[in-house]
Image (tube, rainbow, N blue to C red; front, side, top):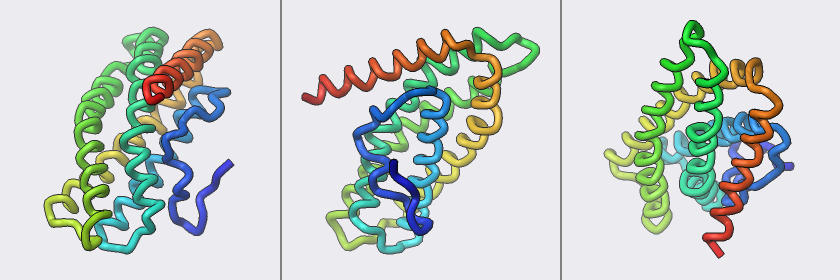
Length: 186
């Protein structure tokens, strides 16, 4: 198991191997949320023009291009529909999910741009132009706001209302998504 070291993101946390154990899909999503917070911290340091080790830059790129798309699919294809099915209209979870799904549309595009900025910067003098810094800072801020909703509202409700069958289906689908992508890479 990897851990956060010295307040800095562990480069091993965002890599392309996102097949680790998915004993509990909700815990797995929560770990991805923690990884995303670590990615945001590295992005903040890059925006501030701090020198960030190449391994950490690579971790951010790997997370944004490999791990984040799986995470978004886990939520959009499994978690959100299951919550809509399990929660009644009086719980108004649909409004929160609608907002999160709209955020995801921006996240997909923005994550690719941020990864490209960081990859290009790694080949340059180590500084980002102002528009890239602005986009990166906005991405990190938006991601943190998004994570607040997911961690404070979505995951606790999911833990309360999803059944063992829901979690088994979710776990199976998560494994299948990752296995399918791994086969396509080879």
